[in-house]
Image (cartoon, rainbow over all chains, first blue to last red; front, top):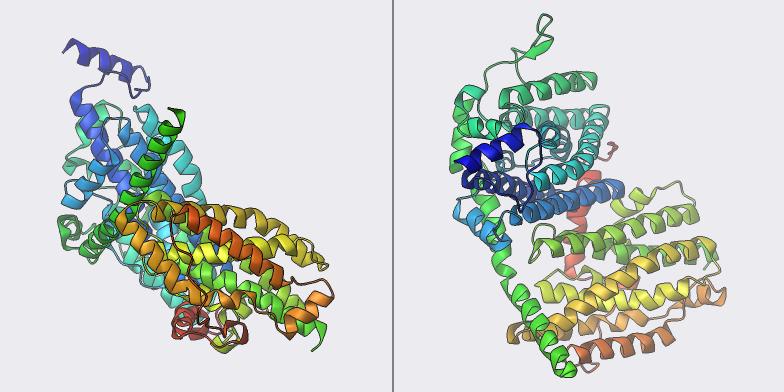
Length: 312
Length: 252
């Protein structure tokens, strides 16, 4: 108990907690859950975007998309490393993903159906992620906060390139505009759901706020995203698929219609359009890679043995 | 054949190799045995597509018909693609992808080392950027060939099978025709005869270290340099060129 008070004091003083520091077991568990979920999201998120690599419409677009997906994979890697500082292996984390114990962001259970979806994912999905991640740069766990600083830099580039795709399509042919609006219609609401349930219904919030893992609430972050994004949509002629959007001059915020939480819970509980597909894909290629990982291990073992023979 | 025409075709040959193999590698995205390797394969893909852009941009200038690099990549029909058959072979398992990369990257290593000395300054400049990347590609492919060949029983079988199956596409790498000979005369292009020997030596060295058997030369399949491809290329291009062909008026 005394330890917990000491810990809370450090947090309250705005100190970063480091890997080797003492921390309450519940704090550690919370972080493992949150950071690994974040890592898995980066990795699973490679799938919907990967769906368009082979069909990217120009050499430049193909390179940008490839580089972007590489960034996501890289984010996954350093988030796995950040999780490993808490005393759990990547193998174990992947097992938890496959068993369903660990989650990934719900947003990636939606399909990427036309090229504008690549724009929408960059602009809306990465845009929503940034709002959350900027806030996490000040999270109390040092390795996580530092990973966020690096990730944020790259994500803001992703967001710009996503918006650039949307803007280009909105100034293009009739079909391109239709594709862009279609993508907007499908991604807008799921992007808003990325911030999680309303503050009144958020199961993990209270401890996370106390420990300063979470610095702002779901609704605060969501509102930031809404206020930032609606003018961007209007600027290029995209319609926000919500008839209740209005500017409130008193609060200086946009108001929106009701989020469909039934859909949110349905998708979280496995009944989104791509839940099965995403998980089967990950499992399939993880299993297909077993022989390669075994070979690499066997080879490095042999090499070590040979080297020690030479030394002997 | 006019010199510009020969140079245009030569540039397409180089570009098509890097585009088609780069495309194949990009198909690995999210499918590699582990995430570091996912990044490595798409990184090589990215290098190759970047090189393609430089080569096709130059090819478009040489052609002088107001086409762009993208026009050449996305609007050109299959029979006007001149990549080696090796590059268009489907990914297969990881060993297959590695063997394909080993053969092509070894070839490119010697080819681009010579292109550094090309009298064509643009080509020499492209080569000087590319050679650094190719060295890494070759290192990556040789490391894995050795690891898989000398890894487990299963990986050895898979690696040997991949080497054997792809061997028949390696003869084509060293073919010289009137285009290459004409450009060789003006010191633009590279003589592939000495490169063949360098390639054979290097491959022999790597396969031996990998405890694998170097296949005997038998029937060698050719055609890529003249636009006669395997059935696989058409499907690849269908996918790659889909948006440009379905919406010809759109800019992306």
